[in-house]
Each structure stands twice: as structure tokens, then as C-alpha cells.
Length: 312
Ligand SMILES: Nc1nc2c(ncn2[C@@H]2O[C@H](COP(=O)(O)OP(=O)(O)OP(=O)(O)O)[C@@H](O)[C@H]2O)c(=O)[nH]1
Ligand SMILES: [Mg+2]
Image (tube, rainbow, N blue to C red; front, side, top):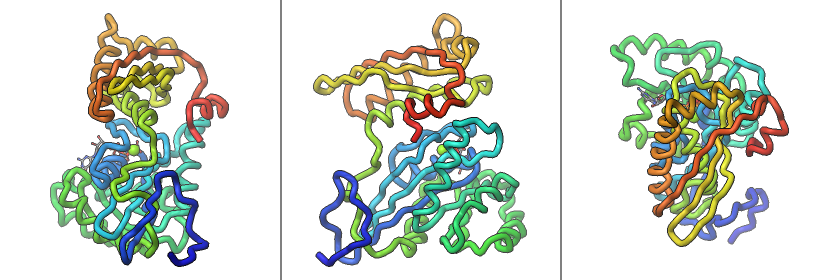
């Protein structure tokens, strides 16, 4: 083994052997809320690592997804949608996550909605450090009816920033997603892999479980539910192939509690049963899930609460 003084500290379970000519690098996925970052990340990794929904600001954490293709290991980093509304502690925390991720990656996938570039997109672009290779991904191409309409827009994008590549695509089309690997590969440095060949994420099962519950909460409640509700795992017990999980949905107001529970408890029941089914797939075992709703006013505006709920 040659000396590699500049290698980052290897995470637990890191790869000990890499093939001849190995490449490995960090690929950030950034963009304003709701452009499809997490959808793309999951399609790239080949498994649901990061939750998605129609609501803006679904992703709250920096989430790593790993995919190894031949000699190249791609370490994708999904980030929260950078947002400019509401100056709460939660939003400041999400924005910090985006900024700190950008500083130490090898290449950036910058997602926008095909044909659109607003102030919110411009803000994200301005955060990317100078000299970093940026791949422009106009996503949701399937929603553009006339592709030719996109040409003048692409030209205007060229004038905005010297993007390294332009890849209009749809994160929901696997063929489009698969093309990305060859496009990004040259930007990965030649170095040993950080993770084992079959690694998918550095996040724990417990973390993924709380996220899956939050996804069902986001998907099964209407726009009336403020985005700043969260999920905390309060009990996690494993007996052989069975997991007993108890989780609290934390909201800010009594009125929100009622919305989640629904009439006769119907909605909470549905959230619980959809979450349980996915948890059983995730853990490949049986799951008993106990869900309840708790009111903690002002949690999203308190740095202390944020930390206790796992926001770094
Ligand atoms: N039509 C279409 N919809 C898409 C595409 N990619 C994502 N979506 C949808 O866009 C919505 C937002 O997707 P997410 O992946 O959660 O977006 P995000 O950028 O991670 O959002 P935040 O985490 O809130 O910043 C979901 O309803 C997706 O199903 C696409 O290529 N085409
Ligand atoms: Mg997301």
C-alpha cells in the first residue's frame, strides 16, 4: 500500500481493498426545495435512502448514499432544499447543512426544474464555491411538452455559469439516471474506496425508520400540516427478527395534533400502517409500531430542541 497522508479518516466498515485504478469521490446534490434531489439520489443508489414528497422541505439532514459501479465508487450527498422563507432555527440549520456540504465535495449536481430559473435557484448557485465542477441538471424533463422550447433557456443558463456539463433529464426515468454515472465518473479522484462495494448508506436503520415515518406523515396530511413537525424514535427493541418500535410525532400546536390523528384516529392509523409495511421491507423482518403525537411548542425555533432531535 502506498502512503496516503491526505486520505480522510475512514468510517467504520470502510473498504480495505480497492481494485486497480479505483476512483472514489463525494457528489453533492443541491437545489431549491422540491426540485427532485432525493428522488434522484434514491434512483442513483438503487434503494430508498432519502424520503420524498410533494411538500417542499422534505429532506432535513445531509444523507449519504453510496453506489459502486465497476471501479468507481460514488458517494452521493443529498441535502435539504436551500430556502429563503421563514428565518427559524430549523431553516438556518438546514441552510448551514447545504453550505458545509458544498465545501468538501468533488463535484456538484445542481438541480433546477427544466425551463425555470428563479431567485431561489440563483441563491443556491451562488453558494457553490468557485472552481468546483458543477453539473447542471434540468430535472422533470417529462413535464416539458415541447423540448425545443428548452433550447433558448439552456443557452441563457450557459451565460449564467460555466457549467461543466448540461444533463436535462427526469429523475423518474431509470435510463436517464443510469447515464449520469459515466458523466460524473471523470470528476471522481483516483483513490481507494471509502466504503465496502455493497454499502448503500452511512445512516443507521433507526434513523431511516424515523425518516420513513416522517415521509408517511408528510404524504398523508394535506398542506394544512406545517412542515415543521418531526419524528422521534423513543423505543427500539430487537428480538430476533422482530422489532418493537415506539415513535412520537412532534408538532407545535394542539390543532396540529388533531389533524394528524384525524377523525376517530383514522389518519394516524393509516400513517402507522403504511410506515410499518415499509419498515418491514427495510428491516426484512416483523415490526410492531406504536405511534403517538406529542405537542412541543416552539421546537423548530430552539437550537437546544433541534440538537436533542438529532439536527447536527
Ligand atoms: N414529473 C416529475 N416529478 C418528479 C421528478 N423528480 C421528482 N419528482 C417529484 O417532485 C416532488 C419532490 O421530489 P423530492 O425528491 O422530494 O424533492 P427534493 O428536491 O428532495 O425536495 P426537498 O427535500 O423538500 O428539498 C415529488 O413529488 C417527486 O415525485 C421528475 O423527474 N419528474
Ligand atoms: Mg429531499
